Amino acid sequence: MNEKEQFGEIAAQEFNVGDIVQWTTWNKLSEEWDTNYGVLMKLENMIRSNRMVSIATVKPLNEQFEEKELFTLSLKLVKPHSFDSEMNS
Image (tube, rainbow, N blue to C red; front, side, top):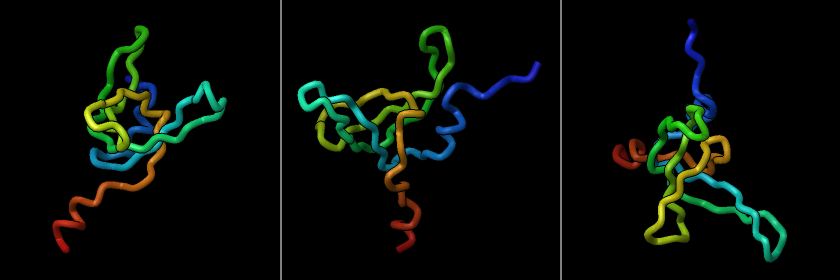
């Protein structure tokens, strides 16, 4: 039997820990989508609603102590991490 990739795992391949990512949340007061930014801390496959899916742990840039678990497909890459290029400079 061929094992299929987990839901969202293909999208997760474009991300690396340390990337700056964005996602949107619905603002009930303004009735518009708010854009949020954060640093990708972890990518992992988890069981949610009896299905294995790709989940990203993100540290929002505007919240000091909170980390959020988001469905990886909801993220958009803003800026890739540049640890290697900074070390070589």
